Amino acid sequence: MATAAVAGRDSGGGGEGELVKPFTPEKAKEIIMSLRQPAVFCNMVFDWPAQHWNAKCLSKLLCGKQIRFRMGVKKTDTVPQFETMCSYVNATLEEFLAWSCGQGVSIAGPFSHYDNSKFWAYADYKYLASVFEDNTDVLQNVVWSDFGFPGRNGRESTLWIGSLGANTPCHLDSYGCNLVLQVQGRKRWHLFPPEDTAFLYPTRIPYEESSVFSKVNVVNPDLKHFPQFLKAQRHMVTLYPGQVLFVPRHWWHYVESIDPITVSINSWIELEEDHQARVEEAITRMLVCALKAAEDPTNTKAWLNPTEVEGTSHEINRQYLNGAISAYLEHNKVAEALTPTEFKINGEHRVEATLKKRKLDVHTRTKEKKSPCHKLATGTAKPEEKIPFGLDLIPVLPSLQNESSERGIAESDVKDLVRESGAHVEKLNCAQEQPVMNKAEIPLASNIVSDSTTCPSQPFISTDDLLDCLVNPKVISLVAQLLLQKRTCNL
Image 1 (cartoon, rainbow, N blue to C red):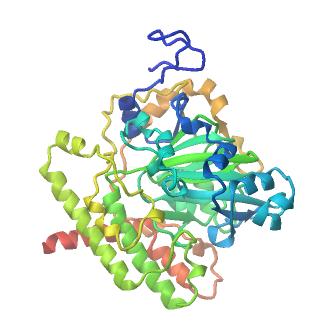
Image 2 (cartoon, rainbow, N blue to C red):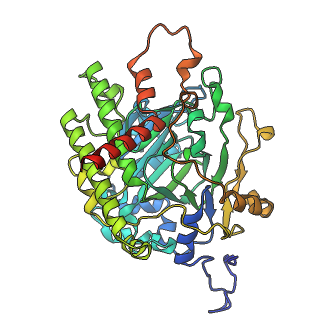
């Protein structure tokens, strides 16, 4: 196991008190490729300049530049607060700091219309390349190369600045896996494994490419309407400054700020599975846009997430689908022509386009097949290899059902978890060897949970009810496989 490196510890190989990172870039990437559950890396970013990017520092770097904040209500009801339910303001970080610290309406700008005891503010999904478009040198302050991704920095990263209570609705990301650096304050993460998808009652309304939302407010669930949620296995962790959380592919997550000001930086890492995922997202977009636009052509705000620029036409969506299918087939053709060693080497280059759709224009998405990228082939670790859990790599453990609080949750705090992690290491390492369900299996209707089954008195089936069935992740996965088989047979 790699040894820990903390402030003031002598590395033995350099000067007295020299800090040494517990994992080399190669080892860190190997761990990321092998992990099948969330984990927290410690002592890996102490020399990153971005580690000092608290809100005050960022305010100086931005020199009065305005950014967009999402304004949410601090409430405890059972309905998730989706982004379509929030209001938005454009403001500077100086105004945000004045408002969050209660310094008065005179210097809080547009925040003066919001009582900070009743509202929270969140500057989320801010691409650093756009935020610092006039000062691109600072993008080098984010050093993802320490995790085995050479050349990856702030250009492929997003910034998150929030006040107490700011949160992201529970969702899963369709593409890639996620590395999250906590810079200032603490954030509490609620995570659920992919196999619990049916228990999270997935929905694509509001629609956003690359995000599948949950109908459940996971911190205050409505068990009358969503009884299957009781079967979901919650994992919880509080992320502290200087720590990096790894979120594996398709893990559900709800994130909330639990300090007055929080700052985070993340980067989505591309995976081999993303090629099929883009086909699935193209199918979903075509179905959602077709049905919702037909229902009410003039009111896209009712179903389109604010992060989506506009509803796209059926013709554009059809072109996108065909482009995604062509890219998938071209990728497979190239992959089959390469030996495993050659393929791994060819996957080491950096992608210029960020994973999340929010940065991509619908007219250019079909061209992504030409971009080289960091492709992580999941499941490449040898079964006998052990994940080096310990002080420097802490597993995020499941919450115990009998320890649930009034809100039905139990937290594994990273600092407390260090003392307990040893007892769970062997169990978690064994879990790596469990077989994964074959994606080609046809899903049974009984495994696709819908909240409509709990409301037999509902007088009619709505468009959203139909979409919940049509674009359920399992259904879309099957449709994508059938389309790809059909296209292959026609070649």
